[in-house]
Length: 453
Image (cartoon, rainbow, N blue to C red; front, side, top):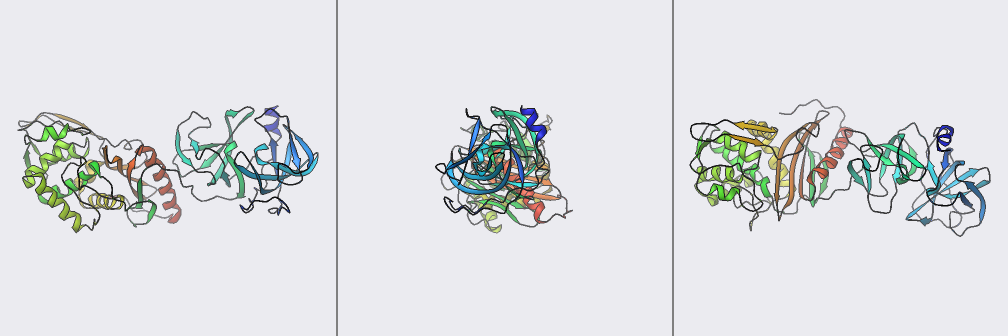
């Protein structure tokens, strides 16, 4: 029977324009009448639907629609809410014309693109990488979000008798699917880029070259920077000494490296390595011991080096940032913002070729030398090699900060940088906001040829 329903559907001629959100209980004012053919499907036990004289549960019944019948949708209106959904359809069927709740419509077929409105009661509707509920979810969206539908596919049924999914445009670089039951219908044509639901406390995304702000959430709220601090450690070091400068690992470096929640390069006191090698240890495995070593060799003490860091921050206009040491463990008086840290990342990418080279590197080997052991270093930034066009920048995690990340990608000729602070899943947030930012940026200025420096 289901296969028969699929074969029998006619293509969508025009998609409904949803009426204003005001509740309608009498004297319903329909949106402009158009013709849409769909199949009535119901996940419950009833084999039919009641057609009512008005879009209300207590309105007079004027006819019935059987479980697998075809109906013509004439208009969408707002009426009585059923399971959190107040959209009703005025339909024409074999038993006459009346109002049927939108949950009775299984699906319509459309050539796309057309715009739908997401509907759900749990506060979040997930998009999936395949048309099945156990497929990975790259982004979630709020009920009421407008989203562009590009086609219909059949996948794994979530409710009995309904295996329909819609292929949607979320801004992602790969296909995304929304289950048909989570979609209401609105109008022909592509809709806006849907804004994803994100969990981080503070987020800012910008076009690196134009400065265009693409997404923002509390970007000026002061938070613990964690190891994003090391972007400033690298800047101060590169300003003051040549990469070939040898540095001696001090006695205190290992204890800082293995501090609670800390990360380390694995340095041994008395070893001598170049600043070049220490920067790889600083920025790939986020070595606290490398940061401590760099600070001690350049400024003598952590306090002296922190003063150099804060002087540099003032020069760069980072007005809501203060550092107390080179490595970024939680400490009183250490704070920054998503805006300041994003500005710092862009500055480093523009001004230091070695920094650009290091932060895009996934793995690096320092061979054994006469003054040091060998090191095999791995970048903690999991977007590298996974998210298309990712070329940096830095991770940071502490108990007070949560999960922090500054990420940079190049797609479609655009360079996007995003700062994420206070996340519980920084890579999920980063993927969703980067997809959104890239799509918004490309739509705003479709012609762009400048390449990454």
